[in-house]
Amino acid sequence: MQIPEFKLWSEKSSKIKEKISPTIGMRNLNDLGKEEKQKIWLILKHKGWFDVRYHKNIYLAVYFLNERFKKESYGKEVLTHGDWHVEYGTLKRCCVEVSLQDFYSVFMNGIEDVAFEMLSLFANQLISHEALERMQQEDLDDSRKQAIVEESYKDFDSFSECLNDIFEQFGINVFLTRDGLAFRQDKEISEGIYEPVLNFLSNPKWRPVNQELTDAFVAYRKRTHDGYSTCITKAITGLQAFL
Image (cartoon, rainbow, N blue to C red):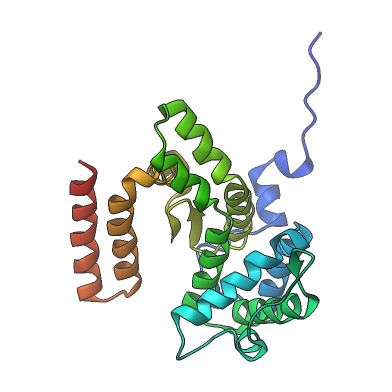
């Protein structure tokens, strides 16, 4: 007996899906209106990424954003609030409120690069760096090391999957990998080549390669003649480091 395969209305035809959700092409984050950004914020909130479990991550993302760019101090409320306060092992409500306020303000009103820097800092907080560092100091076989890497990136990978789905549906031209935010390419290239390669390079032993690739992405984002030239140089250096 052949069991019928139920299909949603949008799965009947690509034209139907296009009518429900028209293709909008690739866009910069700054191309989105406030209503669209508000939708993204609410989706992340309903997915649980602003729950108590991640309050410390949010606070540290804003804190380190201020630390890295002291002159601008994009997290105004956290800067004014001062040192964080812990009660029963969790952040006090006052610290949570000011960090969420700054996180929201930077995402909604800040320039694209600042918002991406903040999201990068938040994502980085989801990685268990301590476990990865301990792994480097221990004599373990490759299968055990791989298991530690996967466990260390568990929360990060969940956030990455969520954020990338949102960004893709809103046409935002970047996606999150274990090597950081990167420009989105053709979907088949991204899923079949780009993401697997960057995930492979997430192993700590490829840190020199990752640094060269990160510098290449930074240079590319400048969108200048010198930036493109530096990008090519860094990419070649990264390849040499890998070999």
